[in-house]
Length: 585
Image (cartoon, rainbow, N blue to C red):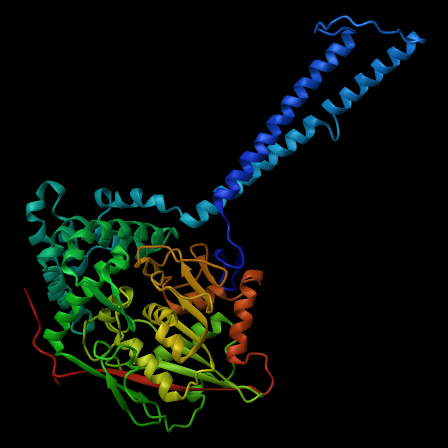
C-alpha cells in the first residue's frame, strides 16, 4: 500500500501477518497442479488434432479384425456424421471454451500463482540477501566520508578501519585505541560515559574475535544506516548481525550459565536465540562495567508527578517487582501540561503523546513513563501504558532508560524498566480485569513486548493490545490473546538489532514502512517521523480490528469517556551515592 503526505512525497508500506497466512509450499503445489492440468489438456488437444485428421482422411490408421456389418441404407448419412464429427473436433480444439483455451487459461493461472508466491517470499525476506553487497562497503567506502569527514570524532573512528585483513595481528590495538580516542574526544556527559563503558566491554578476551571480524563491519553498516537513503538499511544490518551472532555463539554459550532469567521465568540458555545469548553476555559485561562506575544496583525510586515517591527492588533482586508490596497512589489524575486532554484515537496520536512525554522530561538523570486512564460511561476502566525510548547511553547509572537496559531487554533478561512499569501499574490501581494497552518506542518497544509476553504479567493484568514503534521486538513470544501491531521503518536500523524478522500471525502484525520517498525531516528512527509517516494512511481491513481495539481502550469516539494521566519519574538506586572514577583500559 502507499499514501501521500502533506509534507510531500509518498510513504510505501507492506503489512505482514493478519487474519490469514500464506503457505508458499501450498502455492507452489497449486501452481504445479494447474500447470500439470494444462499439460494434460494440451495432450488432449493433440489427440483431437490427430482424430480430426483421421476423420477428414476418411480412413482409420489402425487395423481391426474384419467383422461383417451392414452398410447404411443412406450413404449420405455416414458423410453427414463425419462432417458432424469434424465440426465437434474443431470446436474442442480451438475457439471459445475449447481445450486449447482452457489449457492456456490454466497455464496463465499457474504463472500468476507462482508470481504471487514469489511476491510473498520477497516481501517476507525484505531482500535480505542484499546484505552481502552491503558488507563490501568495508572495501570501498570511507567511514570518514560516511560521517561527513573532518571532525575529530570521524578521524578517530577512521582509525578503526586502518587495519586490513592482512594486518589482523594489529587489529586489537587499532580498535582499542580508536575507541580510546573516541572517549577522549567525546564531550562530557552520557555519550562519553557510554563510550567508556563500551571500552571495558570490548576489552573482554572472549570478544576479541568479534572485535576483529565483525565490529568494523557493524560500524560501517551503522554509519550507512544513519544516512538512511535506500530503506534497505535495517534488512542489511539484521542479516549481518544474525551471521555475526552465529559466529560468536559457540564461544559465548560456553561462558553463560546453564539457565538464565527471562522476565519472571528461569529458562535454559540453550532455548534462546544466538543473538539473545550474545546480547545476554554483553549485558552481563555491561552490568559489571556499570557496577564499577556507579555501584551495585539495589532498587528503583518511582516518583509520580504530584505524589510521593516509593521504592521497589532492582530487577535482578525481584523481577517485575511482583514480590514487593506497592501502596496505592494518592494523586489527582489529570491531563497535565496540556497533554492527553482528548482520547488518543490513532497510532500517530499515541506516538505524538509519547514524544511529548519525553520532550517535557527535562531531568536526564531519570527515566519517565506514563499511565493514561480512561473512565468509561459504563463504569469500567481501561489503560494505555506509554514507555518512551533510550535517553541515556551509559550503563548502570541513575537513569534506567540506558544502554544496559537495551542489552538486557534484547536478551529478555529482567530489566529495571520492566519492574518500573509493572510497579507503576500496580500503584496506579490497574485491576486484573481492566483492559490494558502497552505502547513503546525504541527501548520502550522491547520493554512493552517483553511484558506482553510474560506469563506473570498475564496472570496479574489483562493486556489486550500492543503497539511498538522502531524497536527490536522479534524475541518476545507475544501470545495470540494480545492484538499486536509493530511499526518499523526499512531505513531505521534500530529495529534490526534483534537479528531476526518479527513473528507474524492472525493477531500479530508488522507494518513496515518506507519513508525514503518523502520530505520528512529527521532520522527515520524518531517517533515524530513515525507519527507523521502514518498520518493519512488509508484504512486496511487487516488493521481495522486492531485499530478498533485501540479506540476502545482510549475511549476515542465514545461520548462521556474521561481520559486522564499520571506520569512517573524513574530513578535507579545503587549502594554508592556518587559515581566512581572514570574507567580505562
